[in-house]
Length: 375
Image 1 (tube, rainbow, N blue to C red):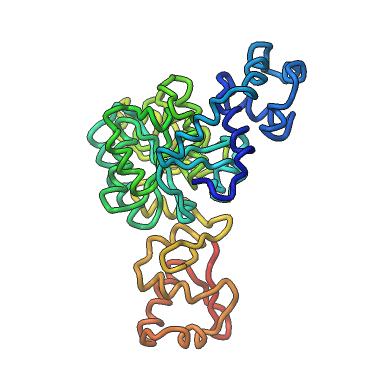
Image 2: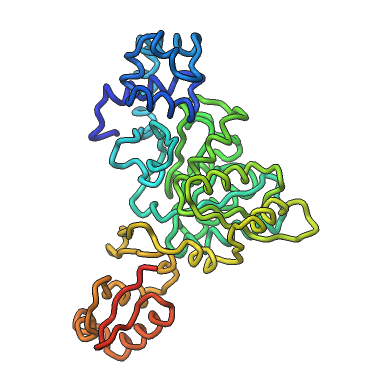
């Protein structure tokens, strides 16, 4: 279930995670003071009370957690239910999420996170949405999932559910980030949707197994949605929509923020229009999204055919274009080398290379050489 993870270390992470009153910011402060969950738990109450934001009551709860058997019970239940626990220092923990300042100490995971999920895009929006919003969320999710991106959202009513359903409709991958525990699906009518998501991706949370809905948990959850993603698309949002929290987290994390425009005479898209006015990228379709994401910080090797993706724009190529693009490296190659590396007839290779050059996927150099573009 958690191969390669030291169980005593995992239990200490769980002990800290189960202490009521430690949110993402305070967790970050504690780690800055004591370095690891184990050192936090081994500190005295007096030492803990010196930490800004930690009062006597919370310090006592942390000290008490050392003797509690709740973590062992939580770990056993995860094993019995087939859930994985991914500590932040574990290899399978999502790399993009690990980079944010307040990354969760541990992720509870139902399903499977894969290497290709590094190419993820979040789609979020209002729970009370219009038919236009529903249609656009599902259409965008389906198109982006078909291109090869993993769709991330929050399993909520409205736009979130449509985003997951759009990805599932084309057998794409999708990740749901919940504010509640894996044994307390919310909203309850999305239990079947959660099962479908777990079968085609993963349902993840930082909350303990039996965590019930609580208003403060949803804004905290939103930093994980953006943290897992290359960018965030807001499809439909009023000015007080929780989706705008996700957009703000994305900005703070250095992720791309995109918004879909709606009717200017409806309040349902006021939040999106404000984002666009303030600098978010206006998007109309999947091609706009792929172009907006730009080059990747580091290339991602997908699990399908072992191809390496340097920019999400490459996901919009057809199979032949992608096959020939992967013959071109980031080091200059003479065109004859590329022709010798494939059994495809020369005329087709040359015409496809011309198309790739027009799409700015490759550059032609003096002397008949080609190089793959990384911008």
